[in-house]
Amino acid sequence: MKKIPIAVALCLAVGLFIAGCGNQEQPAPAQNQQQQQQIQIDAASEALFEKGLSFYQQFQYDQAISLYDQALAKDQKNYKALSGKGIALAMRGNGVNPKEVRQGISLIRQALELKPDYVPSFYDLALALKIDKQYDESITWFQKVIDSEPDNTWSYYGIATIYGDQGNAEKAVLYLKKAAAIDKENVKEAARSQSHFDRIRNTRAFQGFMNQ
Image (cartoon, rainbow, N blue to C red):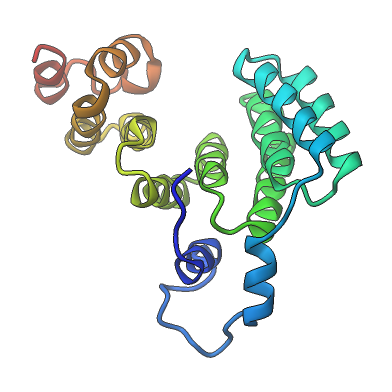
């Protein structure tokens, strides 16, 4: 995982609440910054997190959440498990349980308080906020992933899906092109099959992209 400077990481973590990094009135103590960067996850907790992640990647959210809970029981500061449980809750609650989605968002924010430079939490938060239809903030966090990992295909694609859902063909295609520049085949296949682009599917811009 690409590392980013502590000051930048802290700015990313509080970016939801303040406008930019220029506000120096309430800097975090240097000791706290160092502690946040040096969190050591218990080995058994890490192993349980990895098992949970495997289930999450197979869309088996109940099993993933159970393993993340076990990981947190062994190490309550396991920011990976907090973030993992958060996005698993959001995915499980998608379209059926808004309260669970918001619970997931809260857990991901807790993970970022512990580890502000943990880029997977940026993506988890962006996706959970998107599920909760908090689109502007979701785009902000997808962009933070991109700032740290410029080749992160699915953050560009995530932004494209938001604009697609909103019916903004021009911006949706702009970000689809950015994603396709990295992984053309998979991006086009996803765009072809997913309902996010139904509102713009017959527009000249979208058709032009798909026919390239």
